Image (cartoon, rainbow, N blue to C red):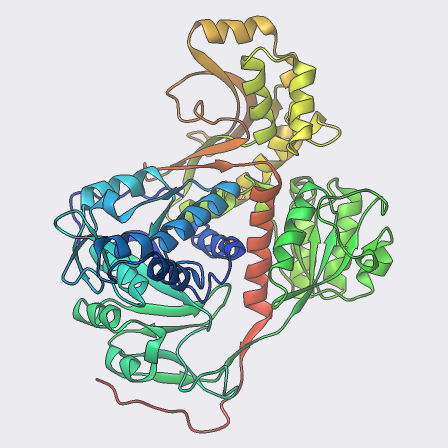
Length: 590
């Protein structure tokens, strides 16, 4: 989603989430992928995100040791320049992780937005920033990644914000931008009466006021950050990645809850191709939440990039389902076999996540009825748009008053091939390159002939218009019919050809849908889709326009959407609060 940023009124609430990731969460370089999952969670809700990051665990201490080894005063300007490098590196790594899953992310140096500091160069306080520059960056990108811990003095020198200073950066930016939420991501899911690592029965606070939080939170939140939040009436959320529960710090009275617990959910993967291997890699990084119980494949001997233990691999669906998975992830494609596997998952008590737009579009009503009868969830965000949350955006616009029309480039494979054809690449070679990059299947017909886009349009009609649109009702134009003369004509006019998928409602309320090859001016929003990128334009009945963009094909964008659904199900099924067995601590209200 790309919410409108109001540039002339800083007091107007902005649909923005400020998420702070500390060193306890970024405990190694690979942890940026888990941070990316958390950021994507809010992008799916239609929020912009500013991610404020600490250095990877241990890096600041290592830089301090290096500085001491080289020599010089601890208070020298060079020391501050050195110590801030850990946060800058973490921001760059997180931006790369976000770009891999298809999000438009930008790492921003504090000096770029004139994040002004005053006081001691090694324990300064923030005092200003360039609002216009920051608003322009937010308007241009989905995610900004900002190094915490430092600002810029009036003389242009860097200044550090003290231990825990990234908390202050997040709180300051949240206040300055009047963010919808400021959430500090820690290694525990809130504030506890005692350290839950040492006392498993310690009770967690659902909400607490600033004064009481100061007494119990110890070093988990920087004092300056907490005081700044109190002075400006900013509610803070303390939570862990991928968790359902959080503590809200605000003027409210404190209330205690039982400890939050999680249990592992067993996950069965049906299909282990390009996307399946990506989902497997994500699940491996979340072994505290998930256990992979089985992987269904067509060829057990096939060499794969992400190897899985032999005991998990099976060509027998019955063997995979015999482990009674909690979640079934269906990625085999097609309709009949996929439908049977999804129904079997529901019958066995599993929730189902699918990346298969063909089966969900064809059997939408039957699958949802089966899920309802079983009391289970059917999630399929990855079936449309890859990593671009198109269905979620349509849901939001429909609920806000209704959708008038949808127009988009929703097949990344076709778009990649069209770009290559515009570069005078032969058709067969362009298709082969798409297959080699993991965008196209061995049989690319669905992408070339518009069947893939048609299935997606059927799902978009359900979410945007609550209409049962069938594939055979959609007019389709194939890439195979695109002649060289038409490509050359578009080039001579300075235009580009795009596979455009549309749904429109006429004055009588009737829907029409089509997938056509259109010659567009280069400055058209859809013309700017490059390679495997998807773009969508939603026109609301109230006249507002919503535009989305991102990678719509490939392993990591699609695997990210699958993983987002899997994590949503874990928050629903695998996280709970224990019953309170004794009187809860009740700090006095301020």
